Length: 159
Image (tube, rainbow, N blue to C red):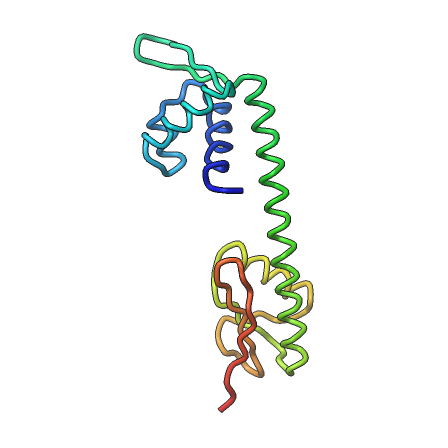
């Protein structure tokens, strides 16, 4: 799911949560410029996914149309499917790396990286019974390096 589609999903969710929200509030919640929110809202209105009504003289109210609700549901399903595919791919990479580490006699790993991919690797290590250490630790320790969405096994040089 690209950034634009994800932003539209986030906008629809925020508007559904608070129809009286302002573009400035939406921009702050999504971490983007007000102009970006304005552009997306205009697109959603033009496509018939959102309607705008004047609530007060200078206040607008955004209403998600039935088509907009259907779009949000489709985008949510795509997001979930995308997330699960990433989860499965990461688990597969981690399992392969751990199998290789075991073949080379390593009995623990150090995870180099942070975030969701690193968390998935930690869970995979737990499932596989491979201890995760914070530093070199005792014994033979391999390194699982997280770079973007990739998981690589780095075998430390033995001195």
